Length: 350
Image (cartoon, rainbow, N blue to C red; front, top):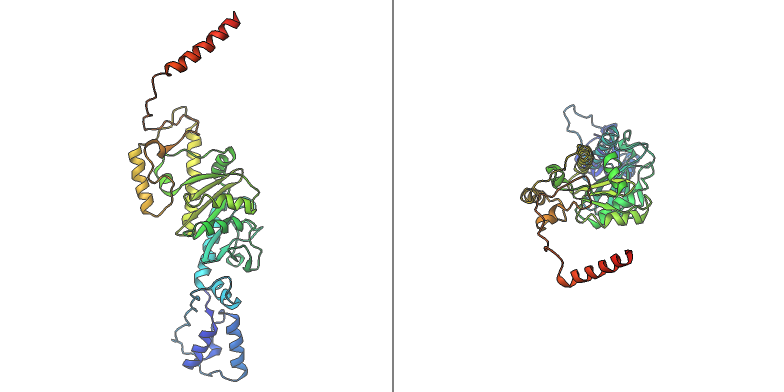
């Protein structure tokens, strides 16, 4: 990991009488550190003392506590090049490789974002395969989508991620991709049924967003409308986007889980047997686990069959909660009307 040197570090070295020429060869100097070092060298204020073999290495410069999009460029660069953010860049690359290796993205599709400040986020670049990104490809943007740092152009779909962050303050990372089975549900306009697999119930809360052109504010707004109570969004005719309040890896887990779930349902529906659900008591147990983990779900507090509403799912899913009994028949007045209409039709037929 390369060391980032700030102007404050330079001043501290001068105060301690350390040799400024002994800086690590691969150290990254912030612009203000470079200017200060140049001034000291020009004024001859460099301590000519050999570096001891056992001398401690310079500690990485601390990331400024409150860096925002309005901070000086030097502080933004310090944040962007800090060890912590460097680690997040590497995580983005790792998640990109996983998405690509599992065929969840194709071409240059998909994008990833991580919040790094109140109004700052890292994101993937445009027109780069997610399987072959490098840390230096990452971009720094504000929550309006303005690119602040990065050599490559930021993804055009970052607006959706940023609108999600604005609407959901807990969100720290999001992943968008096109896993085939989950995307098939999105193309068909079908939300996956519930009450079937525990891992899906605990980690995912799914909703379906209508189609709009990718990268537009309209698309972002439709997705953002759902993130208060859902962490896994099927985007009609497009793909999937997930978010996490813990890490980008957890957001990626949700992609794996929703894809495996949709694939399992597709296969199970071909077996010629009704798909069974677990009981409302079992689902309530899972929802308690989910709530304790801090995950969102719109079903907290629901009762009975509201917990597993599978009305739109057609391959034979049967709710484990008995349906409420319906009245035995129509009331007498309604029966009289039906009988009168029937008699008129039969009379005309004769």
